[in-house]
Image (tube, rainbow, N blue to C red; front, side, top):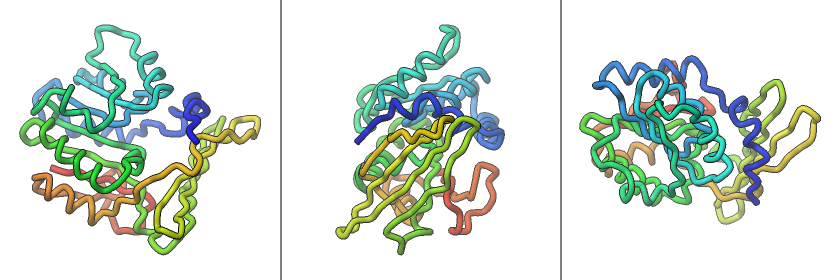
Length: 243
């Protein structure tokens, strides 16, 4: 079941662009010639992308969920901003996007878990290597499944705003396959389904490091958050910089 339309209204407030996240991505700009070329994978409603574009950078966002893509394009009001959003499936990136063009490619809000399997993540990193300019980097924000490796039922931290709450649970079946249930509660305390029994892939830090190496990257640096605190393995989420 997929009812993304139930999430769109609350997406920005449930997945806000924090000051730490703004500073994290702005710091990258200091080491690159301007404008910095950003590529956002699964960009959602384009909130961070608009921030980066207003800072004078060149931003491309790709999204395969129609409702989120529509919201992102509605936000892009000025034709003078160097920003664009496309509906695109990840395996098609190298067919339509510029090779050796992007300084930073990123996947946030644990959207990497919706890649169907390890092979797709490997292929994504290989394709990203083709799209990245020399010295380019990949940034991933990922839920730490390894912290709950012995749990067949995982409840992710609830996301809350003034108007809504987002509830997320991951269930492992007898075959070891994982699926996710996501529901949003609105201000009237009505529960709206977003995803039901939807397959996810629980990528681990070790896999990320291995996939990055096989794709030709030199290193993968792990952090506990966008303030670059050390990753201990006990956090619910982590940030990876691959370069």
